[in-house]
Image (cartoon, rainbow, N blue to C red; front, side, top):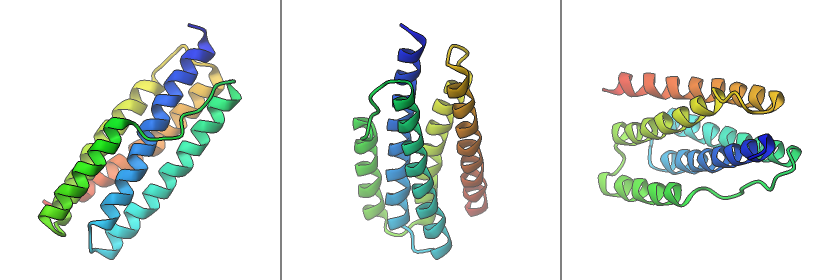
Length: 149
């Protein structure tokens, strides 16, 4: 597989994961009553949508066709999380726990992608910068979870 094909495949996987995360944050924001947490989750959803657009631009730059939908697994997970949220009511702890689980998953995907050595240099730098942002959000959510428990 040519380097650009590998990079396009990797970036398309990150696009799906990032869209999963954006939709997950949007769902989470709808299931908490805390204005501060609601605002934080809505802002993260917007940042993840922006990141997915940047990833799509990078795929185009590499000559590929970018994904534009979240993964099937992500859609299913978001439906499950929404159902769980509806059943438990406004339980901030359970919503934050679910968000942290999602943050663990996206952080892992980006961490692995950032360690790829066979990506074009610009793409690798882009992914490493994106990983730093994802890790910072992960760490913030983890701190929030520990404050609530």
